[in-house]
Image 1: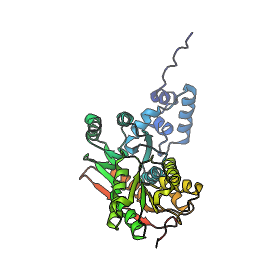
Image 2 (image 1 turned 180 degrees about the horizontal axis):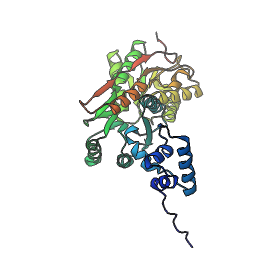
Image 3 (image 1 turned 90 degrees about the horizontal axis):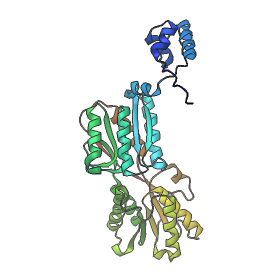
Image 4 (image 1 turned 120 degrees about the horizontal axis):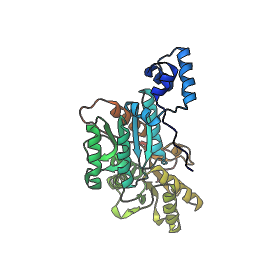
Amino acid sequence: MPHAARPTVTLHDVAAAAGVSVSTASRVLGGSTRKVAPEYEARVLAAAAALRYTVDAAARAMRRASDSIALIADDLTTPSMAMVVAAMERQARTAGAFVTVSSTMAASERQLETVRLLRALRPRALVLTSSRFMANAFDGRLLKELDSYEREGGRVVIVGETDMSFDSIGFDDFAAGRLAGAFVAETGHRRVTIFGGVRELRNMALRTAGFVAGLRAGGLAERDIRTVYCEVGRQGGFDAARRLAEDGMGGAEAVLAVNDMVAIGAMSAFRAAGVAVPDDVSVTGIDDIPLAGDVTPRLTTVALPLAQAGVEAIRFALEKPGTRERLTLEGRLIVRESTRTRD
């Protein structure tokens, strides 16, 4: 036979059993920093134990909603996103807030569902990160959800490219690519292969276009620039480089990769194929993740201010509503041993 449900014990029940006010019981059981006399604290804890009282964590979270910032990210496993999240958490702690994190794994419908769920939990702010957020996404349903959330008193911050009118922080991906392309051209490379990532990812497409612009400005002919598309990750870079090596390199003197993980995968494949970096081929990336300075040879890259983006996202999230802010962050070239000057 099914067991009868245990009656719900409320905070009022505990207070009555302990002979104290509800506010006193709340301070003892809710983790308040306000002091309670030891005798009252002991009575409340004894009453809670006798009645088998458990704190309603959901209600507690709702009461603390003004302290919480919810981050929604495509993929939390990437090193670049880890840098953004770590900076957000450090900055939030400094401001007395806390960050919760949800991953959508770049699934569009899951993104919308996550926003709806978090809206119901009433965080102080929603920070969304992706390569691109557009107003017409899901037939405008995402914009409607975010607008409603802000009308209820929340704050929306977008890290990435967007045409929506929320506070946003973006990176100049085209300029980062152009910086890397110009450097490779200036150092004497005349035949270059670009590992361009996935065409559908807006930030990767902008980096690829920037590579081409920098190379062309440096004097390379269009026929000497080849673009190969691959998955954005270490394995994608490894597979693209392995195929290039198997084809005899096609005369490529340098590889420009859309991010550091692609570049690191490429260097691994070249090493396995007996292609020396940088003696046979120079390799560059974009992002400057911690691993870029640890691999051998150390990776030349364009450092994007990922930690700064996390800090600025928290600053935007905690500010009082006012004029919309749009911040674009620039990268800087970091020259290491994975590239060389060619005669």
